Amino acid sequence: MSSNKRLAREWALKFLYQCEMEKLFFFSEAKLHEFAKIQKIPSEISDLTSSLVKGTFDKLPQLDEEIGKTSANWAIDRISIIDKIILRQALYELLFTETPPKVILNEAIELAKTFGSEHSGKFINGILDTLARKSGKV
Image (cartoon, rainbow, N blue to C red; front, side):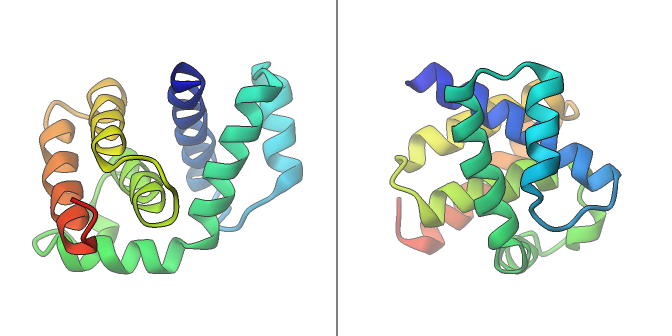
């Protein structure tokens, strides 16, 4: 299950990135289904991906507000797209799922190291650690 969840996080990141590039700021089941079909995402991973994507979109204003408050020196629109998506997705999981915070932080940092800049891992870690403490989950 954990490797499926890791893959689901990665696919969710890729889909959310595509949505950001297309300026699609709402959940579209049809778009996600099309994406999953084109990418040949297995159904067990597609369901987890859908859950992460839908949850992230559903809570987007709240997530951006929390990230904005925490990243005092970086307005949300100044954060790189990849870092912003990773932060949104991880914060959604942190606040609205039962996934252990340590797992969420580790996975987000790994995504940042893989898909972000050379400084993304440290940036993501700092913001998420603060958000996790603020939420009382750590």
